[in-house]
Length: 445
Ligand code: PHE
Image: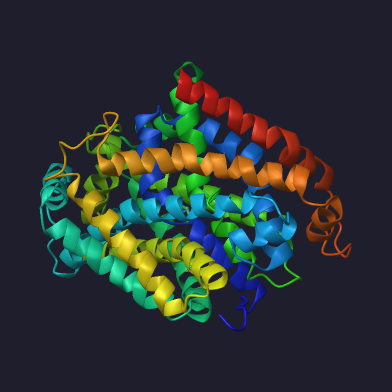
């Protein structure tokens, strides 16, 4: 890249980063994770993780990215010359491609549902949709085919340079997604037996909080905020020097959490009303959502709109995942954007197809009791992202010169950040310690 890109507007800074954060993590992963981990108890721990670890790590990534206007490796080399810390960049690349691999499988399912919705073919009850998804995900050609098609769409956008396209699309689409979610929530709340779903979501039974629940909630917080992978670091390297880091980080965290909770309010009343088991796992949303649409007047249009927006929400996230490796290969190794996009897409294609097959042909191939899809999801979200987050906060807290940290937080002393001290304590001590403790208890239990 000869001249380094920048987001054009202040709004673009927010919508592009929120576009990265809001995705399948909120609408697909959050509901099934809460369903499998006790509902309200999980949500309670999740919100605690967003505040104690999430916001401080977002700010830490922003300080590194905006402070240097470089990709992850280049940024760390600039801030800590001569050290080997920049090798963490490779960790980010590996984790981002793993996530891109399994994420694209779900994006592929969404495309299949979108086309079924367009054809008017989404009929039946949640048991029928459960069958539909089992046949789709288990198929040796349909699921991999959609995964490949999705990755080609992603490739088409990233190789063109995303700034204007993504920024514009995100500006338009994110608000629509929000309004649609609210419409679906209202509908779901009017179903018979909706109260039980709300109870499951909002009345915590603290005895359900186990080390497993805590590590899943932390992993979900990192995944949903796109944290620990240097994704926000990379995006913030495109911020202007006027962008306010702490304010942007707070807006992202609040909006992302709000969308996740709305998704929960949309799904769980319906889960209980239709008698589906809340522990359904990754397939939950696909079984329950189409059944909600049928209850609504004009269900055809709602279904199409919904899957279309899910598709865009997912796409703004996969673009941000891809940008990590692209900026890395372009700036560190002098690749052209086209070549870097091709490289990361090729790796994602291989991983994606393997993950797509892990519900069918490869369902017997297990490592540590997990299929490849489950393994990638578990290892990246619950281990690699928190480790990355711990590194970024320790790096900013202890290694980056305090003068740089302060000038980034306050835009060279021009904005007054009242939470500065608390934030620094969180970045230096609380966030890394909390991540460490959760990982030790969660993984070594
Ligand atoms: N935050 C995205 C989501 O919720 C997923 C993501 C993870 C994107 C990591 C980028 C990096 O869907």
